[in-house]
Length: 232
Image (cartoon, rainbow, N blue to C red; front, side, top):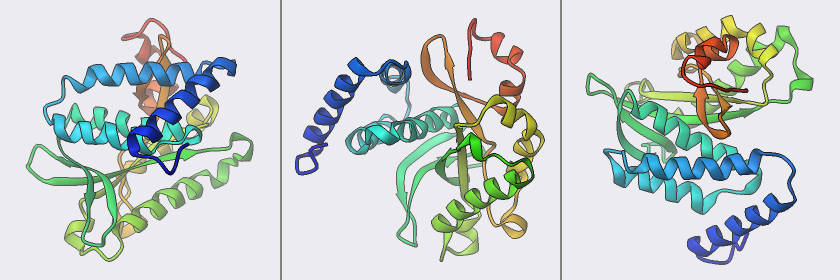
């Protein structure tokens, strides 16, 4: 990346680096990522709060690196998902503790929700069934504490982590499904964090944009009702 250049130049250099890598990469991952950009540009036109969604797109395009591309895609996918239920208020909200949090949304009751996306890259060869809950709770608690430290209790109660599972096999998710479906019941007082239900990316019909629920992953028939093909 041309770190000494302008944001526009940095993006152009990185974009062409990805194109070059695509020519020699035998996997479909990069192709899916470019397909996802095409999808996002179509979604942008539908957004009510176009200014903030534009800021989101510009932010991730100007700052992504090829080795954490799926993290930036995760932010946008979460934003699209939450926009189906809540009002998108702000991208990159600066909190009273000078920490930046990914999104502010407004719920149906007019209350603010401050949401930070956490993409959890998991090495499946290190999986230990008995230690999994402590591992994931620890990652969620670490993220929550980092974003909410020194905030008063009222503001802290508005902070949520939105976890995206990356690198987890279907078998691991199925084995831990009971815990994964309940982790969003965690409370600040008891567990030290609060979170949205975990999601995982899925490759549907050659595109890379769907965030699947735990139920959809362990029961693919739920996905087949809406898509003719799927793979996790």
